[in-house]
Image (cartoon, rainbow, N blue to C red; front, side, top):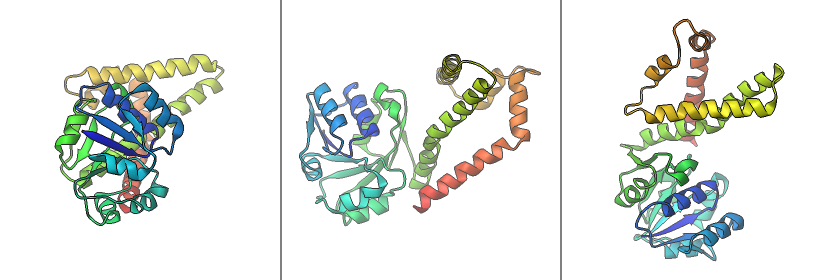
Length: 256
């Protein structure tokens, strides 16, 4: 399998490192030269990496091409390239649908979508794909796991949920700021919160069947402060706010 990556940012770096940390049957990987720092670091770390001279060389030398471009330049970049029916394109971009990307290449080659997370480098995340594809199964089943999504509408739901990473750190940051405003030292609060949330995530992953409601009860002693915090969150319509944010983000992804 010969893979190509258009766009050499954080996700490309993570996916490539996840692949080389697995036993996936990948012969060669071609990366675009745009981000020279990441491209050269990958080439230095892995002998099977080649930095292409151009995006067209990435396309020409690869069987499967992963599109990890910024949305602002994606259409112009893709339309400037020549594809053939033997190629396969896989978009990582959240707001670029299969139909949009297919139109940009005049419907010459099959289009797929995948949503790897940065943690794929250590095989600590599962990757949704659409449609089902043997090559993507081969790659992502060996780099943390794969979810076969039934349709693009379902894929957009995963894409929306996967976009809460910044919000997660915003929430932790609010707690961190509050603790420091009460007079605590920043070194203490950041360490405490980072390990708190890391421990909770590890606890969830350990469960054979993850049920977040059961975990909520497990970590909320009746009459205790954890239960109090959850009740106050509900009373202040925190759930409505989060659902509203998710719905609005989904609408943005679908309409873009």
